[in-house]
Structure formats: structure tokens, C-alpha cells
Image 1: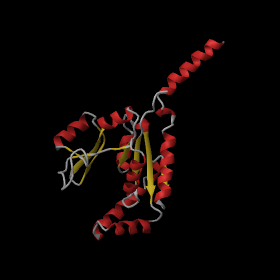
Image 2: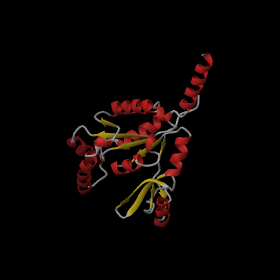
Image 3: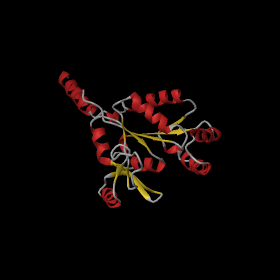
Image 4: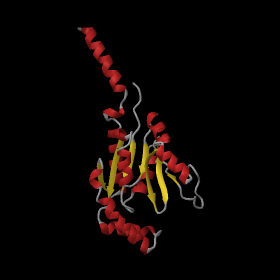
Length: 213
């Protein structure tokens, strides 16, 4: 039997709900799962490497890729463009490998509406409470109180789109949530649309059936 077709796995959540941690756990769980490296027009920061952290493009090159359909999704954020290049994603799913996206609800919507939308699996992570979300942001120790306040304000905009996702999980325990994510991914990998070999298999069954009459 031939292999399956890869999935575009979209993982979204408000900042502090555990998306980055769970993404890393999924990548460790399945080495064939790759992470979609975004393209951006902003300048590289210290320690960032082109192709590993981001694909760094000029604004002209970025806009050209958008015009040519080379971006699955894109957005303009704080003066810079960000997007998900289509070519490496297309190559991965054609080879039967899944690609993981860490994007917001707007990017998720664009991907679902793209030519590859039929092969997406979208999952949204909710915090157990707003109080816990705030506590997690403070515990990270990376942001000023002003930045945390902005993240909290943005979090409700993210949460308000929870019902546009295929699956929604409350991340009240990392281990339990990771286990549920694995179960979802393994089940959707068996979806009929991810099994291109099934059509030919059914045709062979039909031929065999007709030959027995």
C-alpha cells in the first residue's frame, strides 16, 4: 500500500497557554514532523540564523512571493511582513510528512482557505483560567508588566475565535494535553483524504469483485 499524504497541523493559542512547549514536545515525539519556518522582512536579531529561525527576505522579495502565490498565509505586524512559504510545505506533505504551524487565528484562517486547506488539522489551546494565563506570563520572567498587559489584552481576541478550529483543548496539564494532541494527530492521519492510495485500492477490489461474478 502507498503512503499517506502529510498534514498541515495548525496549533494556536493565546500567549502563555503552552503552545510553544507543546510544539517542541510534538517535534520530539515524532522526528518526521517538521516545523514551518516563517519568512519575514524584519532584520535578523543577534543569534538568529537564516533558514533556521526565519527566512529573512527583503520587502520586495516578500511581496513578489505573495503575488506569485508563494505564501500560504501572511500578515503585516508592527511594520514588518511575516508569512509561511508554500514550497517547503508542499514538498513535505507530498512526501507524506506533516508540518507544524505555530500561528494565530488569522494565519490559520488563510491556510484553511488556501489550495492546501483540505489537508489541515487545526487545534486551539485554551488556558484553564484567565488568572492562570496571567500567572504563567508573569512566571516566564521575560516581559515587562506593560508587555504582559498587552499580551493579556490580545489574548481575548485570540480566545474569541476558538470555535473556528477543528479541535479545542484546555491545557490544564501538559502531559495530558500532549497525550490528547498525539491521539488527535494519529487519528486524522487516517482520514480518507490523507490516504490517496485508497482510490486505487477500491478500484482493484471492484475489478476483483466483477471477475468473481
